[in-house]
Amino acid sequence: MKRAWRRQWWLLGAVTALLIAAWWQIHSDQASAPGTLLPLAPDRITRVTLQTGSAPAEQYVKRGEHWWLDGQATPTRADDKRLTGLLGIAAAPVQSWQPASGYDLAKIGLAPPQARLELDDETLRFGAMTAIGHNVYVQAGERVGIVSLRYMPRSAQSASIQAE
Image (cartoon, rainbow, N blue to C red; front, top):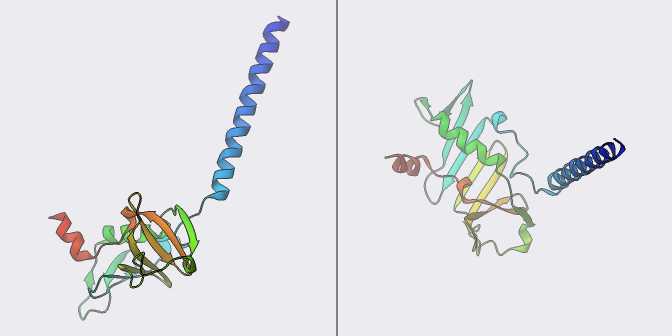
């Protein structure tokens, strides 16, 4: 009987040690993660401006529960689903951050940027794809991050062409 109890205690100790190691690893990964592009909560953003290439800027404002095109003579409702996608870019996970001074911004497509997304008072500038992987350079303030290409914003015109 003693031998069976001893084995159970060893097993319990091993399981406890594995749980502690897993908790420590998760905590360590979260502490060292680069974070997201912006500290904004996407659901609290009320103004969006998107400019891609040389096309005119698209300006949106949230009124109540819906998004509207801003700066037009007649109020025009925007596609809420599309704007939700643009807002999600603020929470895009960053793979790494570097100071902008460490890059030649023209070489990575940030001078001038390929796209500019303003979310309330925060501005994201999107550049070229990275040499490896499907990622893109994004400037937020004085830092340049690398995020997945799927977070590159597209204008409403290109979105409607892709849907057809």
